[in-house]
View 1 (cartoon, rainbow, N blue to C red):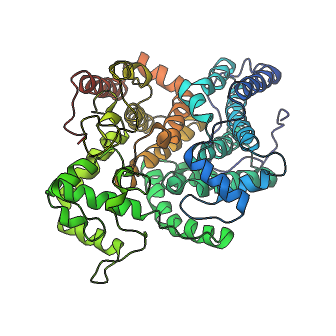
View 2 (tube, rainbow, N blue to C red; view 1 turned 30 degrees about the horizontal axis):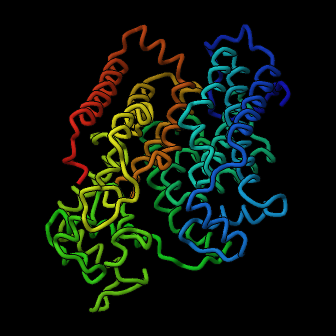
View 3 (cartoon, rainbow, N blue to C red; view 1 turned 180 degrees about the horizontal axis):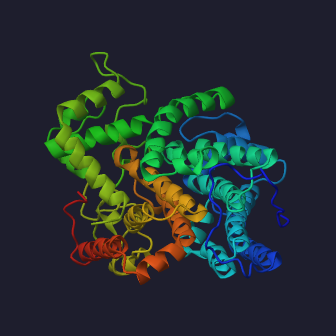
Length: 492
């Protein structure tokens, strides 16, 4: 992109100029461009042609057959089918994911350079090498697809906003396509979408914490049925009732905490010992068609109770009758999903991995070495709870800062990150770092954009910032203590 020439009336009304920011040396455009291209090429060479997970294998099969289901959002299978003429296998989509990913980092970095912060621009581009991101990008998953679409969309918005320029029609159309794809490829993306829509369409004065939070909730409520209808209209998928996995998981959790297996009936025929062996707040997989307790669950997924009550109605009625057990179950799962107060290698406590479970052969033997090195592989920088806590600190701290373009985007990303993570409190059915990819990445970007303000706040010993840093440190300390003390109370 060429250096802009500001014109009268070309700026977005209500968006602040870069008053007070240093502009003495912007640096040249080509070093960042060469660096971004080099990082993209190295990343591509290192992980080519990408890894297929169980989910992506199923989606690829749908792409080949041209018959889609709604177990996974069908848009990714459709995109795979579009790319099939180029080359079979995962390589084309893997290249597309990495291209979007590194283009997003380059746009953020170049916009920062144009704002007069060349050194920070290089730091932003290098953030794309964060090990968690590089590790996740190797796999063809919906989470990576969402990030590969949303990151360049945010980068384009920031590129124009930071220069006080209107977004041209072509760029606006590109942003819209990227946001739509990212929303359709991950069902729960709707919980993070609202703040980004405000960033795209609202004047700067709207980008306050309360309005961003309200937008996250309101857009999610509207977008959930809209995206479902869009998928049905565009792809005509066969219904597989994927949401029933959530209903079954919650029913099992309520039954386990009430000590009453009949609460899962007639969906599953479980005795007290079966319930103890099968249920874990870690995930629902034990009851899945591929899980160790699959034989105890009645199929198909659209079955009904003997009195004609469907599974959704049974789920709602059971929650209403046992709200405390439901809350405990959901909080335990959320704790597991955030990897907060959990023991080392806490997957070893699930039915598929437990060696003390006489009913099932372990899916994989977890060795003492695996347990010892878990703290290295899953250190505090990997825990979603670390980034959720820090996003909250950013939101409080930046809520009182002058609304520069960087601060406004950082606020927006922090709310988007928290909305995405917070949704797992009620809809999560499994634990994996990939489910929090957007939360971690959006918080990292927000932190880098707000780095000058954070540095100033730290030098001035701002109480909200220092208190927030102490709170994040306390969260990490509690997480470390839970692991070292083998704290299992919230994992069963």
